[in-house]
Each structure stands twice: as C-alpha cells, then as structure tokens.
Length: 284
Ligand code: NDP
Image (cartoon, rainbow, N blue to C red; front, side, top):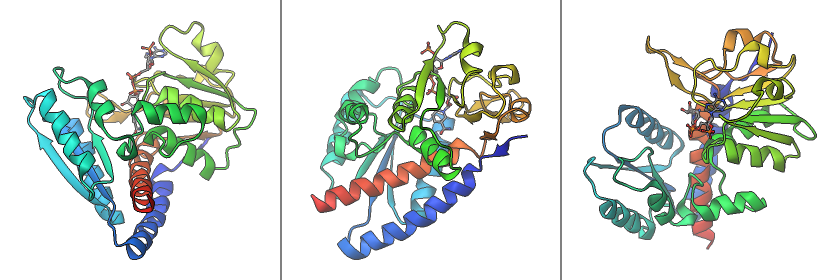
C-alpha cells in the first residue's frame, strides 16, 4: 500500500517559511511583495481559484490586487490594464486567470505581461529560460510537484519518468524539470500508442490529462511514484483526479491524493514566485 503524499502538509510548511522570508524582505527593503490577479468574466471555477490565491497571499503577507473585468471587456482594454500593471511599482507579479473569453487571445495576453512579472512563467521568454535551465520562475504546478518529490526524498536521477499530458502549463514543463534532475523522460499524449506499456515501465509517473480515474492499476508498475495532477468534477459534485486512486495506491510506493496533493502546492509556488519577483525588482 502506497504512502500518501500530503500536499497540504508540505504546502503549509513552505508557506510558513515564505511568511518569514516575506517579513525579512519587508524589514530589509521596506517593500511589500504585490500580486495582481486579473479575472475576466464570471467563471465560477476561476472565482474559487482567485479567492484562494488572495487568501493565500494574505496568509504570508503578500498584498494582492484583485482586478475583476466584465466578460465583454475587449482585448485592447485588457492589454491596457496589463500595461498599467507592468508599470506599477507596487505590483511585482501579474497573473491572468485562464481561460479567457473566446474573443481575447490568450497568447497576446500572456506575451504582454512583462517577463519579470510573469509569475505563472507562461511568457515565451520564461519558457525559453526553462528550456535552457537558466530560469527565474518555474510554472507553479510542475514546480510544486518537484517540491513534493524533494520533500519525500524521491531520487530522480536515472529513473524512468513518464509524463502523460503535453500541455504548455503542466506536461511540457514537467518533462523539462524531470529531465533537468536527470530523469529519463517520456512524454505521452492522446496519440500515444500502447500507452499502458509505457506507463507500466515508469518509476515516476505524472498524469495530467483531465479525465477522471483514467489511470488504472494495470497501467502502473509495483513501487512506482504516482503524481496525479488532474482535477475533475464528478457528476455528484466530488473532485476526482486522473488516477483511479484506491486501486493504484495498492501498487504504488507513493501517491498524491486529489484533493490535497498537487493542488495546494500550485498556489504556494505562486507565492514563492511573487516573492522572487519582488526581490529581483528590489535588487535591480
Ligand atoms: P490540457 O487539456 O491542456 O491537456 C491535456 C493533455 O492530456 C493533452 O496533452 C492531451 O493530449 C492529453 N490527453 C488527453 N486525453 C488523453 C488520453 N486519453 N491519453 C493520453 N493523453 C491524453 O490540460 P492541462 O494540462 O491544463 O490540465 C490537465 C489536468 O490537470 C486537468 O484536469 C486540470 O484541471 C488539472 N490541473 C491541475 C492543476 C493543479 O494545480 N492541481 C493545475 C493545472 C491543471 P493532446 O495534446 O494529444 O491533446
């Protein structure tokens, strides 16, 4: 039976450390790190995420600015808002909650955020820096997973790492971070053939596809470390990951639950990135 990776525990520990670091930074520089979160429209799921981000900021002493714009906001209006925040010295991190309404190009919006304030690490400059291993920010979800692996002493060097999902937000950067830590990485996606043959060979398996209970026990090797990124809402309202948790836990050595695994780490990494951005701004 697998040991359960407690994302809440690790996240709380990191937040306690961040709280101290933020306080020290304020004392030294007289600057309070600031995060601006822009939400366009009234997607209920986004509203929950945004509320959680503001609360998490308050808990560690980061000032958060909540910018709520109506669904009919034009692309130009949103881009001007970003320009304003790019120029605002009190704002060190800018995040635009995705998805955006269809009439706004996510790419244009991401590209407009000043790379130094791009705490999601989605800007092409930051993506490129991750590719060459010389980065300031890491995207929050993969970075949170790396922290979990570190906390649970999972050695990555030489291990067969399989990432299922190749999104720009999770799958691709996850693969790069595992590669950086000397894993031997395979990335799978919807066109992958004989997926279960590949997942069954994995020592470390990260699943990020958005399909409830997709990864079943027969797809996992005994003793594998299984990281479930998925967040899926079941018809009865409960949350489920991409992994058939109960059955896979019988085989894995370590496994993340949903909720309480990867999710809490994502916001914690956002706080960390905001502090990093504030520090770089203060030190020039
Ligand atoms: P995307 O929809 O952007 O990407 C899904 C990926 O899964 C694609 O690469 C797709 O392949 C692949 N995929 C879909 N179906 C299959 C299949 N049957 N077999 C193999 N691969 C498949 O999703 P995200 O990466 O943004 O998110 C993935 C999940 O993680 C979602 O549930 C999301 O809610 C959750 N999430 C959780 C976070 C957290 O903090 N815990 C943060 C971000 C996301 P292809 O490219 O070929 O289409």
